[in-house]
Amino acid sequence: MSFKMVAVDVDWTLLDERGRIPGRVFEAFKKITSTGGYVVIATGRGMESASEVFLENGYPLGTDGYPHALTVGSHLFYLQDGKYVPDEAWNVNVGKWWSESRPIAKEIMDAIIPRLGGIEHERAWEDGLLFTSLEDAVQVQELIIRYMRKEGIDAVFLERNGWGVGLSDARVGKGICLRRITRKMGLNPEEVVAVGDSNNDRPMLDGQMGFFPACPANADEEIKSIVRRRRGFVAKQNYGMGVAEIIGSIFLGGNGVSVASCAEDQELKEVEDVL
Image 1 (cartoon, rainbow, N blue to C red):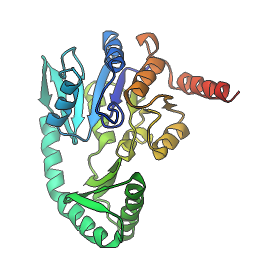
Image 2: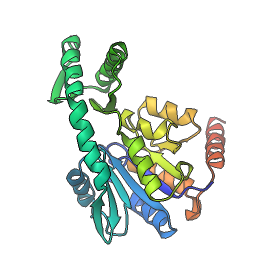
Image 3: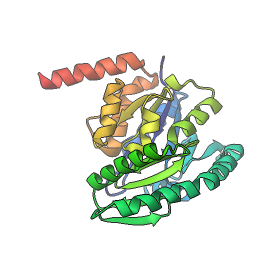
Image 4: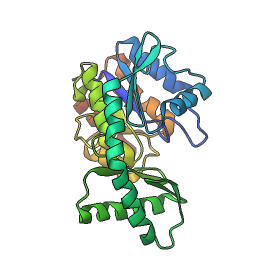
């Protein structure tokens, strides 16, 4: 089956450490859309913040007919007649669900903070923490997961993005949001390439939703292991250049290639690199 949609995370996937998106990414997006494919942005940022990021990189969202849809902070928007229209039914539910689960998330953080010992942290919001290193963030990620398992808590799930960890309602997340977008556009999950770099992208990449996984070279080791295990595509380049590499390799000539052939091609390249 050929691919017809690419869904891409923003921070540390499209954006580099200086907040830049290379021009090759926009060229790759145009190549996909020119052949009838779809581009989706999947970010934990809000709509205003996501729009600012693209504007700062010289691209007002929707200018060339893409992204066709966005999942921003679990809220969904679709491009219609040059404007982004909210998925009202879904967005209302997201707000309702979070009002139900947010007190649980706060209680978890209240219980975890006294257990952090000497780990330097900042409680940037009620349901999330920021750390000074990736190692600390990963360590606390595991601590919270163990705590939730022990207490039998399944109403929320943990997301880590780089050096920050937060809790979200279990009925949302990038995987579930992208699945809804895919269905709205009449596509099968197998026709979608999902690209991310960190733990909060895992729901798009771990196979539960059926998307083909890919990541840039700078992705967390956890993510690269998941992508490799699922015979996905790990780029050789970082950040946005890695995204352009992924699109160039997978959406070959704009026509797409099969999941199997993509994985086999990468394995062959890796063998050649070793030799």
